[in-house]
Image (cartoon, rainbow, N blue to C red):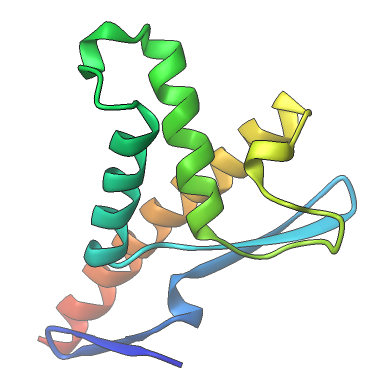
Length: 119
């Protein structure tokens, strides 16, 4: 398990993870490190086919970004899950996206609170 130093605080992969039961199925997302986030951005750019971001309607760009991001941050899932690009349930994708966004905020709060205590 990878550990990251943040000030006086050590953050593990588990600290960056959050699990949620959706329709009785557990999904776990892990907040990406900056280098992993850069990879997600690069993959999103490739998925746009080199087109200017402004040439896409916001909804289309956000959908592409959501699919690419979820495929990179979901680290545990039900056996039937093959990836966000195969999910035909927009509600499930929205719930997973919300889980990811909430996980990012939760990690930021954790870092702020715990690094302040250490420093």
